[in-house]
Length: 318
Image (cartoon, rainbow, N blue to C red; front, side, top):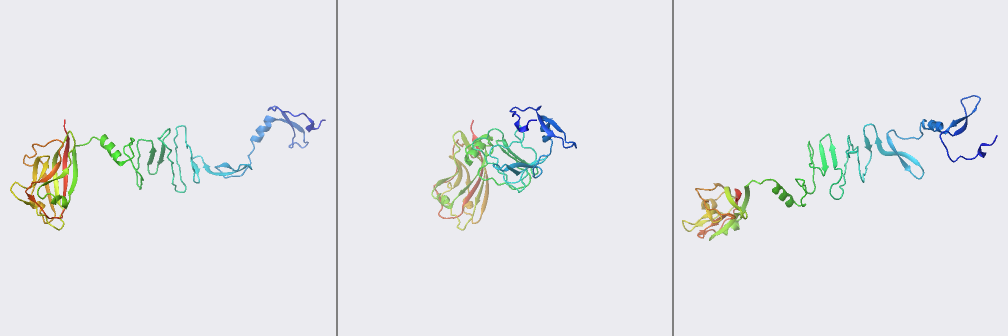
């Protein structure tokens, strides 16, 4: 009988090839054969070796040496848990639709950071939902919803609505103003200083509402005047019966301001409704709302600011 190692080498194996073995379960130790396919099935059916932690995904702890061990990822039947800081440098996808379903738990309390990719949103939107507080965050979505208790701080500019505009508050306001139909009723608050009021000595004009622009006119509805008394009383005086301080729309004279109001020795509040006694019957388009003192008015002292809260219409002419 030839020695086994002296047999020719087979370079092409099939499942039906035979190996010689000894049957150890038989006391007489007979020599038998087994096919390679039967041997492979037997090996695959045996418990695999190695020691690790149940549910932990393995990794190479030393690749060159061929050593494996526990990773920081745990996979159970209900969830996948990342035990330490994890960086997703490209894509995290939960199913074929690109959504991450179920619970994503931060065992150490967070934070969970999404690094915004450069450029405009493309592909699948970034979505974040914590079901306990209904916090929803979307990049490239049509809305941002925050509900339930809690404090949220936004650093930088928040632009509403989401149509792209230049990154300035003025541009955002201009977009909203152009999008929302504007009512023509407006309110403006104006304060005249001591020096401005004393400049009315011998006549003068102080603007309260500037001219609205071509194709528009001002229609004043109500003015609240407040003399915020300081310490020195004004000494407005009229040289003649026709002299005084009055409201004007352009060149159209309206209600007069009595000098006893301007010369008050305490805080003074007055409400004026417009028009008054059929005045303002010849107002012009695109003119300012002012107060004007006639040439015969004199004033040389006083230190109280004069404040106005004005309700008016800016009418677009047909």
